[in-house]
Image (cartoon, rainbow, N blue to C red; front, side, top):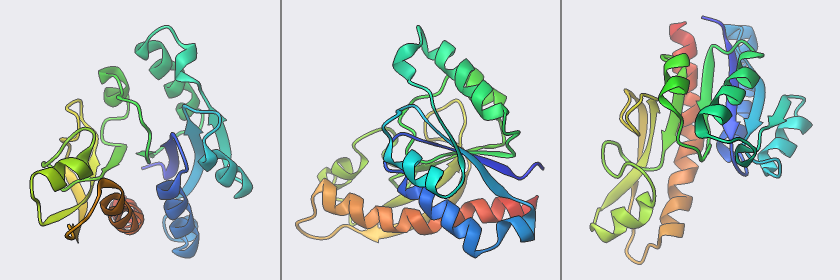
Length: 194
């Protein structure tokens, strides 16, 4: 497997940064021949792009609103990704639903992190929905991406308690600390498998 990693973000890129830092500290380049080759965003103002560029990583921004259709945007995005010959394409807070053609193109190489314990609470507003349902635990899931939203093979999960008085924001912050641990761990496990 080609070990280049391309990470897609839409915002601050905290999961992307956790992956980049783990790749460095765990010596992925030496151990697996793996490196984060590029970070691409659908928002030019994404703070994660600034951070990635400061780390010496190639960056690009493609404004999805500049394309006539979702398919046109995904085609341009695929072209940008494929320039880096990715072995893995990592969705790290990339807030776009991808077309079936995009998912097919990267089948077996596309991973995502979702802020719930899948299969519970697919889609959006996961933290508020967990609180509203009276869940005692919430968490995050790293999974392979398939054409069905948030339903691919589970690669790793983390569980956090839902505390009395939690808001969606406080729960999200607690889950995010675990995302930063499990996402790099899941990617490293994939790299070890080759």
